[in-house]
Length: 101
Image (cartoon, rainbow, N blue to C red; front, top):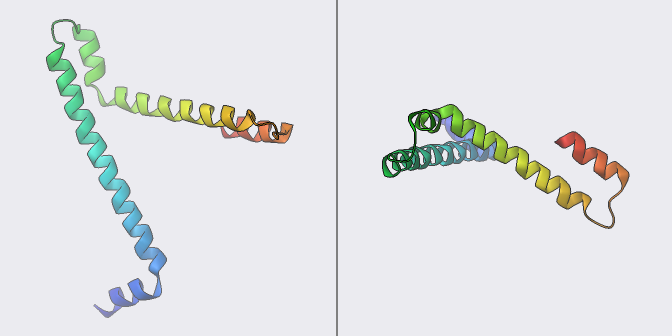
């Protein structure tokens, strides 16, 4: 309709934001499918050494959420250390990086 055409022409930022959201969703979906397949492979390939309790932990979605959360924390810490390691770093820079963690 005419409204949709006007929205795309008059508000290109909206179109770009929608495109970015779609791309982000597609990336998350691909990651989910990849991790699900990897999880199945681990449980099948190592069923003789993976105990039932460990298999239940790896099999839960919470495990992968926790791993993702931990990786974000570690990445933030790495970025903070890299930024603070510079010769031109001030005490204010250190404080800002600590707050960001």
